[in-house]
Length: 124
Image 1: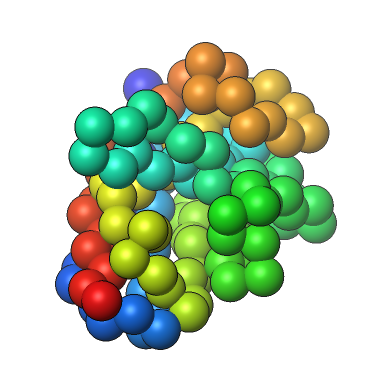
Image 2: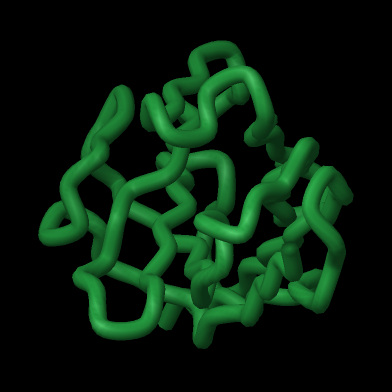
């Protein structure tokens, strides 16, 4: 059974940075496409970014493009989301997710495994 553990959230001021991490266990990490999603209070879950199996292809939502970088370290079974120039509208619970479907996906229903979420709060 694949398990994902999210970490790295916190409280930052507008313009600050955070690096979210996702540690995976229980599967062959390099066989999974990884994604990050977020859910703001009262909102549905929103796709943020995805990365293919070997990290060569990355994709971003328009809301974070240019401010966030998704990357992975397959030997360490980790994926990360570096977030810069944070805005109050980035405030949400962030989830990493994994799917065997490739080369990438932005669709929540295509992801099989999910982390528990990590809270990101950006103060104005």
